[in-house]
Image 1: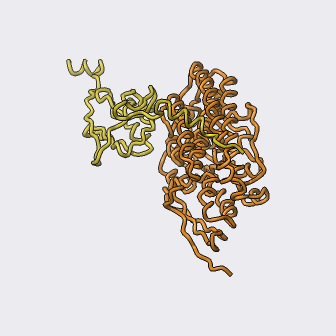
Image 2: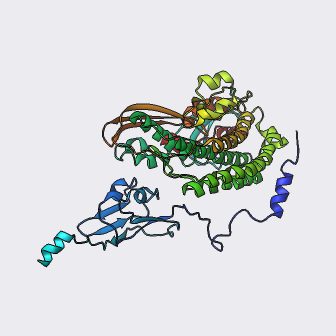
Image 3: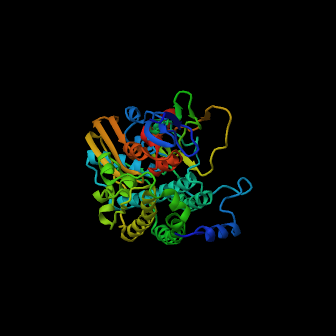
Amino acid sequence: MAFFEMAKTALRTVLSRPATIRYPAEPAKKTLLTRGHVTIDESRCISCGTCQRKCPAQAILLNKEEKTWQMDRLRCVVCNSCVDTCPVKCLFMDTQYTAPTVTRGVEIVTITYVKPVKAADKGETQG
Amino acid sequence: MTKQIIIPFGPQHPVLPEPIHLDLVLEDEMVVEAIPSIGYIHRGFEKLVEKREFTEYVYVAERTCGICSFIHGLTYCQGIEEIMQVEVPERALFLRTIWSEYSRLHSHLLWLGLFADSFGFENLFMNAWRIRERILDVMEQTTGGRVIQGSCKIGGVRRDISGEKLGQMSKDLDSIGQELEELTNVFLRDASIKHRLKNVGVLSRDDAYSLGAVGPTARGSGVSLDMRKTGYAAYGKLNLETVAENDGDCYARCVVRCRELFTSIDLIQQAVRKIPDGPIDVKVTGAPDGEYFTRSEQPRGELVHYLKGNGTKFLVRSRIRTPTLTNIPPLVKMLQGCELADVPVIVLSIDPCISCTER
């Protein structure tokens, strides 16, 4: 039987710096790999829809006609699946968590990518 | 005969991190019978397998449990790989083992904290979670997620850990080991803790075996069952010593988990020494056609995933049997004959993970 087993640890923790961060005065811990939120480079997206198919939470909706990329931040589970499978690598994982929100809603991004005109087509239009 | 009264315990109770309900039949202060009921957080994960492609279901499988998420992902991937006859590169197997053991460290530390909290030792609770934070930091640095790692995929792993980082992790574990030594000394030697846990919730070896106890609950009663001994992932190549105690009380279960912390550190350091170079994944084509039962050792005990595919991208059946489900009958047995005041400690001593259980 032992008594005061905790005394040493308790004394040390009382005298040492706090183990917690004084958030938000001090920024939260982040690493290079931290999965914060998904961002898109709308000028490179080819509207293939792979991200929508590969999303386990069905948070992404791609409208090919209207050329929009919709993301429901409250559905997104930040699994990195879309970023990994994007064939043109236009999706990125930002290390910053999304800010808290009180409203539901989707984020709509208009895709500005324009398919480059092929050399043969160019000839036709010029001719 | 003394008049019997029924006291409801849970689903909302300060000691329970997750909802489970127990109807305690009391005679004076003694519990004569406990009737458990679950079903407060059923989420239908097993049905969801029909709606998500098998490659994406890894993320869903991982979210079955918020504590041992990595091992759920690993077990699911293992099952699919067996059905599809995929040969996983050795480096990926070692990385999986390393992350599994980190999960175990984090889960056991979480439990030790909650357990300390259940008998009112708040300072110890805070200290256990302070050390746990160091484990979670390593998880985030290597996988990108603190609790949901998302680093397992069918055919391997999604991220590699550099040799330099592995060396640093191994070195860090030495200092974490020293802190753990100090922490576990309190659990194992302190007079008030011993007084609170010794001979409380005794489960005999025969009962543990016949009622299907798994993991530390079984090992605390002297049933030396550990699925890591089956040698899945890279466990076959590592030297693993099963920890078992014979008393079968709450103290024995606490001792088992305290000692397992050091086994995990040892396993990670062995894996870091033995990890080979090479690719971390193989390309998987086609779809699973067939069925497979796969087992692994979670921090709470044996986890079973049953998977059945029909050659399409969507599986037809997934069945997950989690350790807490099989630990509930032993829990009911432990509760019979105990004092009402000991119920919270006994319930926590099986490390209940209800979200897992109800899937």
